[in-house]
Length: 377
Image (tube, rainbow, N blue to C red):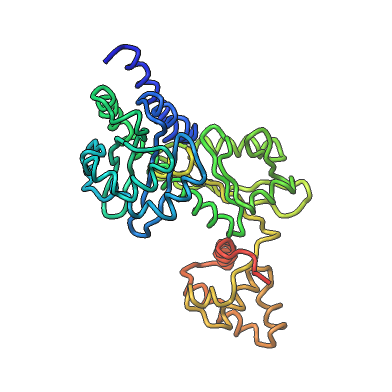
């Protein structure tokens, strides 16, 4: 292999990995490969064998040809009916001879109408669920791939397989992140993902509303800022501490208050570390901040307390009232019952929740409120 060709192959390999990592569109490396392999164009096809759906990427696009292929000829492509072993290079002559090519609808009707005839390629991945294949298309005048071009494909295929694997993992990771983001946007509490340097990686809808109010917490310069200088220093010190890889095993989450210039109740912020295996999925985030606004958080429904702790409906109503600041005597007067009855119910509540004090009840109910988003009307 000549030095110039080797350089071209290495350049094409770099472009393939760039595409797999999402840095450039697939059309760029496929265009480079088409030129390198003396083809008209290159394609990367992904067939979902469970649904029959097709995704195709090409060095160049002809809308009519793409539509014809998807609608009429993909299903009769003999290249995809051949037993396909991942990494095995195949050409047309591995499928049929020239006479058979002349009579096959895929070749005689589809390819010939667009000036195509021959190909060389390889399946990069093939299992019961999915087929991923790479191919180089050529005209009748260009003829079959020659030995030097087939050797170049053989050199490229392992890199294409690894790139396809990287692409798979990144696609799955992006879906996971998308699902997590959608779930977090349903929460009433603010959720913020940050790295060890204090850079914001993600914020859910509730957190963005908190930042837009700029009453105690805001987003500026790529990071979260607390309005009070002491709170700001404390916030970022704790983010750095919680980012320690062994924090989850040694100390767990940290809870602290962020004061608000408006005089409203302080935000309650909990900083929780990510374990190592979750950090890559979450874009390098090392810390999750959960921000609760006591002045705005919805309380849990009565049914939630009944189902979660086995409270009676009456006990659940009392628990909600006490968590919102009512005293036992005030609740007794409002409900038209004796104070002794309320105190008896409170004792039952504390026993069922396995807590000892009324202040602990407030904390439990406040934590439950973050699990329920705003009610739809």
